[in-house]
Structures are given as structure tokens and as C-alpha cells.
Image (cartoon, rainbow, N blue to C red; front, top):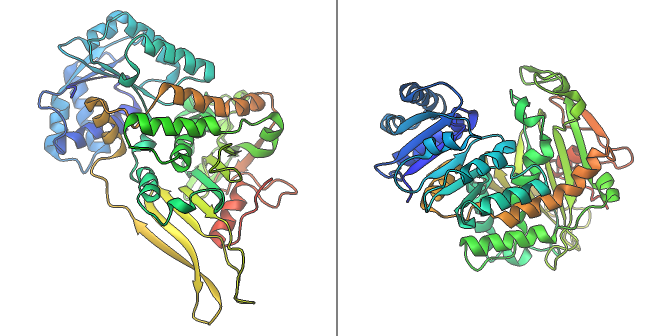
Length: 477
């Protein structure tokens, strides 16, 4: 196990909210080496003492349940180096020490090529690893160039393109539910499943992230990475093992099978929108275009939806709908698997049989199955729901990912070809949107999202409402 971690961009939000609490959790669980060293590198003119005080403050704010001795141990293990992350000499000073080091780029993705190029000039110790946050590149060409730079620095198995969604308990349980239960796997195909929705709708608005978000938007921020990763786990063929090669090979198969959208498809199977002023709970939300740091001329979307089809034996005829939106009325974060209706009902006028829906709740984590049964009156159908809550994980998602980095287990990281295939899927959408083939719609903050399209009787949110109200959602041809 590597016992040195160097974080570039160590004073940023990612480090404060996720990486430092994850290290404290790992320390509390006994997973960190006794001689573990944390080096923080950033632009602030700090020293070790100032950095350790900042770490202590952030852990108190973001890791309340963590034991006090674990927080103190993380702070004590830290040192600080002021660094220009594009300068090879500054980088060399930050990673100086004995033995291999895990270099975590907690930086804006646009800096990755420059920083990796600078790392080439430092000469990483043998056995070192490089960790990158999503998105991996800003488009397909950028991902290919970044992969080329990384290949010249360290072996592919030493590159960790992390996506914390893959370490979430419920995401892992998608595989567990499918592959460990005979009752599900025989039904896991287009013969029985009409539609799978992968949704990350949130009440959060921009929350001060304009510097990053306004350059990417909902499609690049959520759909291109997080939601496509969920698609891979839901749709993949059963792997021989959960080892890194078998698991990642099957995920790449899914992305390669996605039918690329034509311009016509993009206009009929995608939507984009951004929020107007509104109210969410007791919060007044300004229009996205009026948020501080936003350039309205960029036409950045805060809501994105795409419908995909897979050209393979298992899934031909099933619709996969991926959607993410900000500043909506309610949080809905789940994978919803909607089964086809039964072919015949022997109940006469005994009610309507609604489609069975298996839901993997992502936040909060849980599992539910919507069924039909007989109610108090004979032959009258009534909806039933079976629910289960997941046991609390022993480690948070970032704790799991950091442990994999230190131990050198890349199964839950994104392989280079996988990152490129994900960009291939969204490239036609990005191109069509840049040419304004799809209008940028608007919706009030605190609403259900953009209104249904004229003539469809449906739309992104209406379809979800129907699922929850018990009616079969319309399938867009």
C-alpha cells in the first residue's frame, strides 16, 4: 500500500468536503498506514501550521461523526507546499520523498493536460499513481489527448479516473441485486423491461459553483460521466468476476453498443433547459442567467435529458432515459426499472394493472419494488410496494475510492477507452446543441422542470409523475 498522498488543489472544496473526511474515516477504520503522509499543494501562501489548522476546521465542519483522534491524526500527518501546479519544479518539490506517491489532481479539468505535462518533467517514483476527477477531458479529442499524456507518464493500471458514484452502496447493489438473485437475472432484458430511467434531479441550485458549472452544464457535469456509469452497471452482461479487467470490459461493451444519435434523433430525444427565478422551500432562487459568475451568452443548461437505445441482443427495444436537473421542486435520485405490462388480466373490471417498477434509490440509498395485488375487495387490484433500506456502508464513497487508490485496486476507476467511449455517446448531442438544433427551454426554480412539449402529452417530469401516480408512462417513439 502507498503511504504518501499529494493533493494538488488541496485547499479547494473537493478536498474540504470529501477527501479530508474520507481520510479521517480511513484512519478511524484502521486502513491508513501508520506512517501515512499527506502533502497539500495550492496557490495560498501558507505554511504547515496554517494548513493543519485549516484541515482541523474543515474536518469539524464536514466530518462531525469522525472520532477526534482520527481528525487529529490526519492533520498531524499533513504538510503544505505553495505551488504553481503548472510548474514542474513546484510539482517536484510537492511530491519529494521516499517511495511511490499517489498524486491527486483536485483541480478544474481544464488544467489536467497542463499538470500531467508538468508531471512528465518531474519523474514520478516507480509505483506511483495519478488520480483525476471527472470529467476526463472536455470532449472526445480532449479525452484522447489526455489519455496519450497519461500513457507516457504511468501504466494504465496506475491511472485512477475516479467517479464516486461507482462506490455508492446502492450503485454497488445494482450488481448485487442482478447477479445474486435468480428471480431477477432471467427477466433482465428487453422482453420484460420496457424502460429504464436513470435520474439525478436535485433542489440544489448553482450554490456558488459558477466558475466550474457555467463551462460544462448538466450534460457534461452529470450525464456524460455519472449517469452513463450507472447505465453501464444496469445494462452490462454478467462479468466473469468483479476484477478490474472483467468488470471494465463489460462496461465498455455497453458504451460501444449505444446507438449514436443523428441530428433528427437529438431534436426528438433530448431536451435542455435552464432555470428562471423561483422559490424552493424558504429560499428565493435567482434566475440561472443572473447568478454571480454566469455568462448568459454561453447558454449553459441546468437541465438535460437524453433517450438512448442499445444495439445488442439483450436490450434491443428498451428505452434508456438519462436525466439530471438543478433547482427543481423535489429531489429524485434513482434508477427506475419499469417492466412491461402483463399480457392478460382475468379480473374483468377489477382495476388497472400498473407496470411493476424496481427502484434503486441513490440518495437516500434504498430499494423498492412496485407490485400489484388484490385489495380488501375481491378481484379489485391495488398497488403494493416492497421497500428496503440499505445498511450504512462501512466507508463513504470517497473513502472507498481513496482506499482503492492507495492499495492499487483500479476496478472502480474509469479505464481510458471507457472515458473515450462515454464522450463518443454524447458528442452528437453536444454538436447539435452547439448548433441550436434543440431550443434552450426555461423552467421556474422550484418547479417540475420544463413543461411538456406540445402534442406529446408527456415530457421529462410528466412521465415521472405518471410513474409515481400509478399510470404507465408514455413511450416516445
